[in-house]
Length: 333
Image 1 (cartoon, one colour):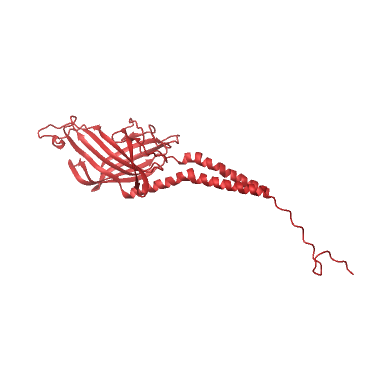
Image 2: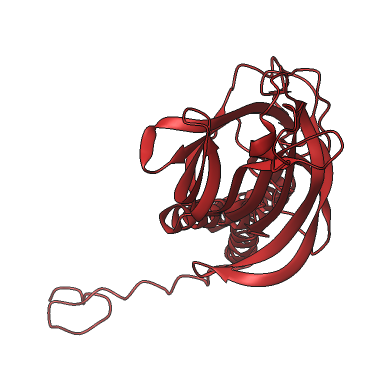
């Protein structure tokens, strides 16, 4: 009976030892990936900002702007390829004094590899409805659970070009140790404007005829990312948009802002990153390590139980005689 119990313990121990590499190398590949069904709303705020009020043809200064970004995963857009995630992003920019009328709306759809986070061009990806753009590098996420202290190519949706995101420092964000990256997006023409602008609004001398203008954008972006998961936990976007004449002599500001993720949403992103990091540590370390310890303990217990023999049973005690003494009962007189 002891031998049978020992063999059972050895079998269960072997199972736990086999479970450790299965979780570490097979299950982890299916857990440490970007989710296809992401839903997230974050807000960025900029005080003392400037923008051109098109309704009143007036440049407004000293205003507080709020950018509300919504990311929503489209689980049906990748067809049968479970290795691709498709996310839609919409950003509405508001003057907080007029919260019901967005100043600007930007939308785009990205498709990316769920393991590497690198962008791919498929599944209806676009920027503001333009499906002809070709994206490269990274988009909303850094490499999943594999962020190094190096530069990464990131696609800028405003200027529609890939610009390096350079590693700068290690800093704390709401108690989380994050890597800080910066991206300098150069002054880039983004749109040709059909309507001619009055020369006075472009800072040109009186009497100058209305001018044809193009729209330009430039930015200095900073991202703080959790290196354990690749999830950004804080953004700072110092952006500037202008109208310029083809000769560069006339220009006017369309928007200028220094947008930073609000504190409440920073904490929410940190909590999300900590939760994902716990899942990653579980499948990489905790579960495999526990399985190995349990398996070795069961193997040792099973071997001991199966190989240890029980001693011979002691002889039965002699019967007790009527007179209280031990031994055979004496014959009757």
